[in-house]
Length: 302
View 1 (spheres, helix red, strand yellow):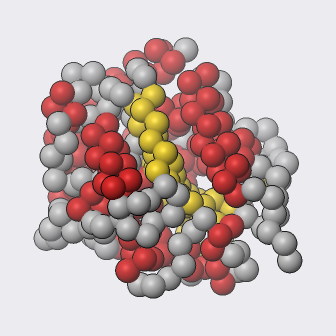
View 2 (tube, rainbow, N blue to C red):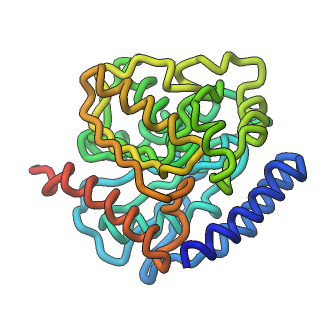
């Protein structure tokens, strides 16, 4: 089944992101139709919520493990595409496996809203959670692809502003380098069916506007990760973005951060998103959920 999903996603992504050179609105519509149709896990409830002016959704599982913790999730899509619609199934899967509610954030996208709009929205969502009564050490920030890079950028921004860090963070296939300098960008180009240099460059240009791609809050690889909370980083070993994950993990480890890097054999970009019916996806999301729940432990005492 995994091979069939890879073939379908790869064909659609290649024709959409690289060959067609479509405008952002059309890219968004195609991603919505391709991914948004995946089912939510049974018992999932969805609640629309305004998070300090940022449209978001609470994705709650049928059975909640603890009542005082949550996951703030930042979707992928190159800072240009993606939404609650496209990532609701993945959030549902993560909520069910972790037993935690997931706040899925519909942050602003380029080219209409350039950097640092996405970072600002992520910070707003985090502040909203704290104002709602969640303690920082009971919040997890997670994201995939651009959302994984945005997760790390949010941590850097919190640190730089002297604000409390979350308990931990998870980056799934994180895009950490908008200069596209990783060696895997070339070495894995023929193996990765989903993410290609030309498509990434176009999205980086749309997101950055006139901004510098080496700015740490756009490309966390060029930041100083000192003081960040524990991290889990997942990446597939045939991704063009493989070295984005590995290099950031190495940088964080050298800075004394508690980093767990897992490079999954034969996996492609954000394979977690293919649904609970795909064994490799289910195993990866389950591993993320286990990392989160083990690190969070029991509910905080009151």
